[in-house]
Image 1 (cartoon, rainbow, N blue to C red):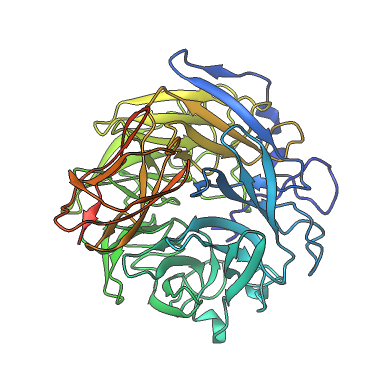
Image 2 (cartoon, one colour):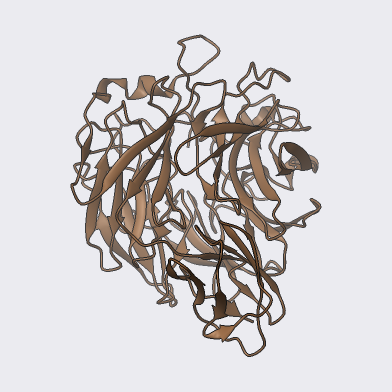
Amino acid sequence: MTKVRIGLRTGSAPTASRLKAACLISAFCVAAVMASPAQTFSSLASFDYTNGAIPLGLVQGIDGNLYGPTDKGGTGTVNGCNKSCGSIFKMTPAGALSTVINFDGTNGNGPTAVLQATNGTFYGTTSYGGAHDCTSFGSTGGCGTAFKFTGTTLTTLYNFCTKTNCADGAIPWGSMVQGTDGNFYGTTAAGGTGSCPGTIGPGCGTVFKMTATGAITTLHSFVNTDGAYPYGWLIQATNGSFYGTTSAGGANGYGTVFKITSTGTFTSLHSFTSSDGAYPFGGLVQAANGNFYGTTSELLLNQGAPDCSLTGIGYGTVFQMTAANKVTTLHSFANSDGAYPYTGLTLGTDGNFYGSTACGATSNVGTAFSITPGGTLKTLHIFGGSDGTVPFAGLTQDTNGTFYGTTVIGGTDNDGTVFSVSLGLAPFVETRPTSGKVGATVYILGTSLTGASSVTFNGVAATGFKVVSSSEIKATVPTGATTGTVTVTTSAGTLKSNIAFQVK
């Protein structure tokens, strides 16, 4: 691996201060847009650098809007960012963009992911920036931060590399997840106490736990043989353990799948061999059958940017891992149907999985796809440049049933886009958290919830629920509730949760 920085550095103006990842693939950027008649693709918004550039993954807020980070751009001017430290944006489902937070280097540089906690506050990480020097990682602007924000007020919770030799981790990339205990769990792509070959810097990466006030506990430091450089998100499985991937390391050097408990008991579950995939940069998703699903990229990133002119071991895979840790390749990309899926999958309400490839297909600038649990792949959209280039961060399903995603380049100013893919899937509701005890408060996200007449947890009515807004209901897990579907009855019909709510 040549450089730890995954975030692309690009913009609309060809100035020396703005690295253009587009130059790696500009030969393939032709104005062709292709879509199957079975779905509707819409390009919703284009970034113009002042409101951010290189948008990454999206998350739906309880207010019904979509939120996400931009790795570069914005108006922050401190600490050498030159208006290039990144931002947090908000977008309505119709595509109206507004900036919520601008980073200035001292409070972080290059936000990579955000999530909204059960208390309504947003939490996230920046891959660089903050208070501590990260020269050994190729940056003079800090080793990354953890932060929270409410409205437009940002609070830095933790500066990584606080400990000597970054024993507490550096370069947090993947989204954190809030555990059932209320704490936040995540990974850093570098740092820790393990030793790794290569040029990334000290350490092979870590798994950490963070309280809501920013107290960090390092749960595990990778040592290369058990994995190295985790970039993907963690998930908390139905058994209570957390699962994730490392992009390299393991028995064969091609990356791993691992699990870890909230107290730090670590188990390496699978080492990729290249014949079953290599270099998983994304996280995992668990389906209703208990199996885990993910992707391997099969191409390491070149100087921090997907270079679609390079050739990897293959073009990437989608895989399944059973509870017994048996890994099966469901699909191997052939370049004609996409190449190099650098992020994981989203489980749709129809039971299929949805994702994106950064490269490949007609214009070699990426695709959006769906795949069944049995491995049947369908290309949903082939990008062509004017509608976006390199859909790096995957897809998110909104409670209105539509999928949303971002491209890191392309659009009107070549600073990235937000797009949607509608497949005609019905609206649904989403619970936060997805598990809890009887008496616990649960927030239910959806669309057109005003006037809801009932809320049930697996058939047991929740009394005294409150409709906060058209996109939010506040409810209490009722006595007698068991694990199952949460159902909301409105004047327009019945909405069901996308996954079963686990009653603990």
